[in-house]
Image 1 (tube, rainbow, N blue to C red):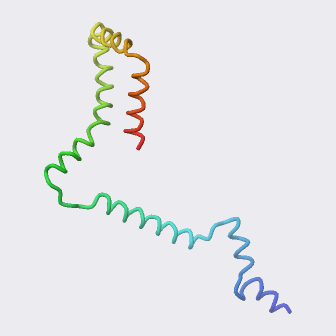
Image 2: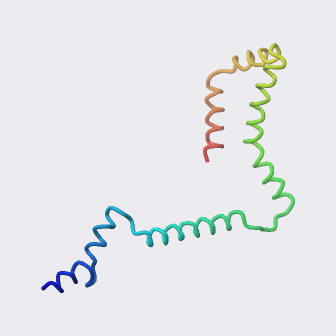
Length: 119
């Protein structure tokens, strides 16, 4: 009787103690296996995405052009701050011109920029 009770708790197909403990604390070995599989999948994705492939000059040129808009927007914004500090009159004149742009055009520009950078 005691043997069958201990067999039910510690062996015999299902381990009730292990299953109960795994509710509160995850199985470390299974967790490490999942982490290793996740890391291997990420590395294989990076390898396929950034792998070396021979491209022509046109493909390299277009890839370079596709990488320009975000840095140019960031540097352009910093340039606006610099121009506002160095020549406030010139900056104020340009900002008055921007204030005259109709609101629907701002909405259109916002939609275009959000679709371009939102992907």
